[in-house]
Amino acid sequence: MEEQSTLLKVSGLKKYFPVKGTQIIGGKRMLKAVDDVSFSVEKGSIMGVIGESGCGKSTMGRTILKLTEPSGGSVRYKDKILFDVEGRQEIGKKELLKTRKEIQMIFQDSYSALDPRQNILKVLSEGVVKHKVTDKGSVKDYCAHILSLCGLEESALYRFPHEFSGGQRQRIGIARALAVGPEFIVCDEPTVALDVSVQSQILNLMLDLKENMSLTYLFISHNIGVVKHFCDKIAVMYLGRFVETGNAYELCREPLHPYTQALLSAVPITNPWEKKKRIYLEGSIPEGSDIPKGCRFHTRCRHAQERCRIEEPGLSEAAPGRFAACHLY
Amino acid sequence: MELLKIKNLSVSFKVACGRVHAVNDLSFSLQKGKCLAIVGESGSGKSVTALSIMRILETNASVDGGQILFEGRNILAVKEKEMQSIRGKQISMIFQDPMTALNPSYTVYRQIAELYKLHRKAAENVKQEITELLGRLHIPNPELILKKYPFELSGGMCQRIVIAMAFALKPDIIIADEPTTALDVSTQAEILKLLKELSEDTGSAVLLITHDMGVVAEMADEVMVMYNGRRVEKKEAEEFFRNPEHPYTKGLLRARPENFNGRFITMSDERGEIKSGGTKYTS
Image 1 (cartoon, rainbow over the protein chains, first blue to last red):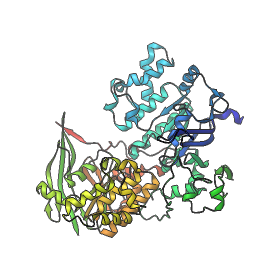
Image 2: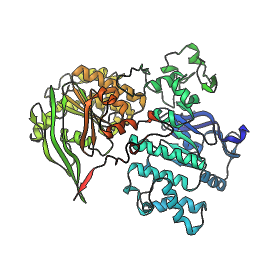
Image 3: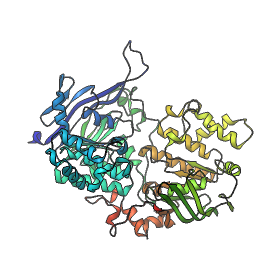
Image 4: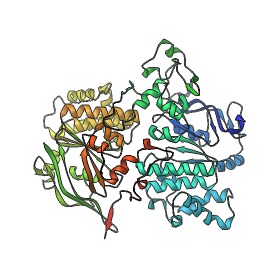
């Protein structure tokens, strides 16, 4: 039963980049952007990934889709293994293309994600034709239908990306992802450049579509205020690894990991008369090529003890359904 | 005390299909040592207002009317040379994107030293002064940072340098145009704290432009809402959050993500359709 509802299973995912200018003899230094991440996403749920810029959350999203080559670990989508680096298994090219129909991505910067020379019909129909979503004669009508689902008019089909506002372009980005009829969508900060009201519209659209088309989202963001309400589950990422996962509301109400606590305390107050105790982290984030030994957060942690400098904690269940990678629990 | 008074300011841009009226008949004043937040959606004329005060509008823009009185003087009428002595020294600005605000081919030291060179003839002790300044911003290892180029630093560090430059000559007014939009929440919290500390230290008034109500709640003494280049409402910060009057203001406050109730609230949920805060065209 449980096996059936798991849509995506990621185990031990790693993505390392060689650091330029380091010696080839004696081994290149590696920047560990994603360093051993495991999780699964249930069908019909929204999983959120939060963390500061440079923590590896976007790289993780891209690696899952095989948009960049993974350095280690495996990803299973439904009963298909997309890749398993250790088991030397990899999905075939044709099969991968077919799977792309089911897994789509919405990008952060809607302007650079759309080809400026293609009108919207071209943008939307490319995938539709390729994957034979509908028969040739009705491609145009189909694209118009998808646009209307995303709150845009049919006339938009013959316009170009630069003629739209940021919010409208993001709708087009969503429409493009939806056009091929996916089940799973990786969303990489889809509302980062938008005003609050437009952000609300886009997020509501995504919620409507999710309910009507039974979609599943992996939602990458650094906007904690949004993630708290939008997602079912949240994972907090620090230096390429998850430090805490759990139910969205509970995690935001009572964060367990010292890093999550600091991150949440930095969220601005909602009203001027509110008092909030801030936890300011000391120092800056270590380089991904120079991850501290032991717990990777110990250099900035208020509770760091001797043990934290030596032994790296794994994710362990700290409360029912709540996991934290910290020796305190 | 009124430090800056804007009277009936109107600014428009010449574009291919006519004129865009970005700021229409805008009046407000900024008190000494206080923080005034200007909020509104993109395109509501917030940034154009800031650029008009600094007199660094683009060449296709024109001020169609009004006055900007700084210490009783209309700075729209002063000569460019005189404006140069005001800019950076008495009124300075913090920009949204720290990476593009700094010159990529200058080291941090040269970037900051330029300010001193332009506004003060004597060049002694500049290095020491700059080092002290960076120390006040809690920048570790200021000597090392001074030798670096902007691309070698993180976004948060670059924004600190931009802030250091803005406060260097202890100006009367700091205009901060979305100073934390490009930053993470944790960096944002640090930068806001820094802005507060420094403005209290130097007694500078802050004109804070933002669309983030959280930032407003953290920083502002007073809040002004702009829509379509016009002033919609101006109030004391606490009063603004407790009793917003204008339907547009109410909408802005309700559209915050924390008011989620199964769906996020949009501006159009509030009393029918409110057009998003764009600008008007005339031909």
